[in-house]
Length: 77
Image 1 (cartoon, one colour):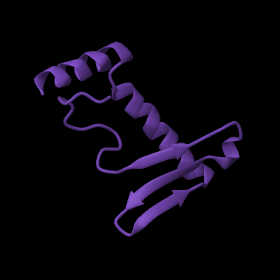
Image 2 (spheres, rainbow, N blue to C red; image 1 turned 180 degrees about the horizontal axis):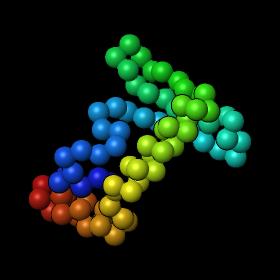
Image 3 (spheres, rainbow, N blue to C red; image 1 turned 30 degrees about the vertical axis):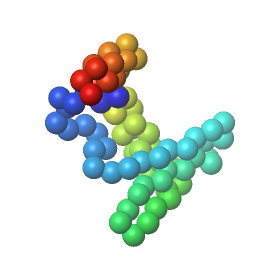
């Protein structure tokens, strides 16, 4: 979960679905574009998306802080 105070975070502005499994050669990234989904399976591009996801994870709140934020938002409703 990314805190509301974050004005920017890696990957903002686009939807990204990353599917991975036991065989990395079968990993696929899906980007939602205005003309439809784009599927990416080239290793060099996937490496960039893995790095993006690592940076996004670093910007995210930990589990406890995410739960606190969810409870706070729910109380404010």
